[in-house]
Amino acid sequence: MRSFHRFCVEEGLLRSDPSEELGAPRVPQGIPKALTEAEVEALLDAVPGDGPRPRRDRAILELLYAGGLRISELVGLDLGDVDLYDGLVRVLGKGNKERVAPLGRTAREAVGDYLTTGRPELAGRLRAGTARSATTPALFLNARGGRLTRQGAWLIVRAAGDRAGLQGRLFPHVLRHSCATHMLDRGADIRVVQELLGHASLSTTQVYTKVSPERLRAVYDAAHPRARAGKRGPWREGRQ
Image 1 (cartoon, rainbow, N blue to C red):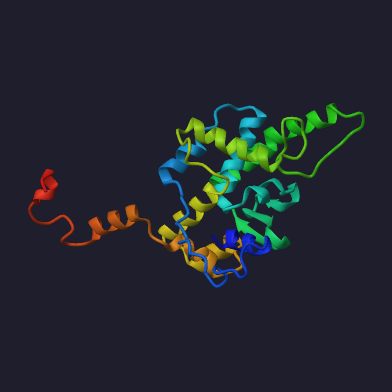
Image 2 (cartoon, helix red, strand yellow):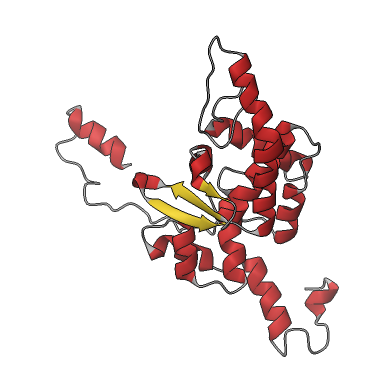
């Protein structure tokens, strides 16, 4: 309506804009849609095979979930950004802000397996396909040996989701959201999660503290002494 009235004023159809001081409606901020821990496990186990690409794909999924990385941050990683000995990865986030994220055991094993067995073969394809020797510092390589793109990484995540039966449940930030949600559910300090995700403001991280209706119901049923006590009412029997 505001755009329409502004257009009418610009075209000379109205002398003044009656909607000039009309405020826009506030859209409530939704809860990030995270996967359950069981769904994440199914997703991480949904890459079969022992070739260089399956090893790479498993490392990508593990790293996205372990470090709460954005896909753009993941594909921007270089070999020197990963320290498997100490279990750390250096991430360049929004606004070129650098942060260090820890890696758990399974992520370290997956990345180490890829670096030992998968990446050398992919890197060899780049050298074989060029007239002169060529190398790239990129951590994750595509099938031709070049740096994996953001779109390529997202296709890998989506393909694994399809195999895990999560069609329609995946989007680029799904593992990032799941990492933050699961850590907070297990008692992590919100400022630690803020540092892990690289949020400039704590208010951005606080969205993960919002409780979904399903979780509210489950916690209420488990904790409230009268949640399941008493006789079944008529509404339980399907009567009005």
